[in-house]
Image: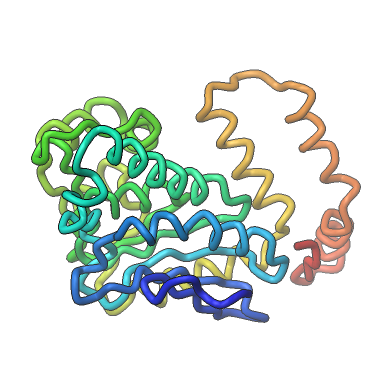
Length: 267
């Protein structure tokens, strides 16, 4: 994988064969506040991870254990978001970063220690799953800044927590603690802080042992459903039927009949 474009974003590798990539928001002194340059660099990094056949799962986290990300770096706003013209460009960069993360073919997990606020919550919502520690706090705060959240970002929130909870979060700007986040579906797992990294890594490595065609097709089909598709079409039928021609399907059947764990090789 090419060198990281910015010290504010670091890619690490773990798991068998380096199959788990971890993208670290690396500004711990500012609670990992997200600078414009980080948003601009994210699509390229995500594209490299998508193209790297050895990577099967992406974990996104903040450096340290105090914050996933405390939001966009407001100290930049006068320069990069000072008027409607510059704000439009800024918003386009944010949207592109979130869309790239959401569009990654491989499964993604946000590992949330501590604060997950504003733009940080936007990135976490663009991931497939969110695992959090018991000290995690989530919030989306446009109402505290006189801003309006984008339709795409709002849809991700509504898809996860439903319309009423989304309105509560957006209109109040209040923080949602880990317990309530799990109750409303914003967090999929909540564990003590000392256990979060272990839980996330174990689940990521579990996904690496599964048939990757099945994993990615499941993500794609769920995405189609969330986009409004309710009936089979030619593309979705082909996606399902083509699985029967893969070596992983043949291996899965062999392993079942031989009463052993499958050794899937497709990536």
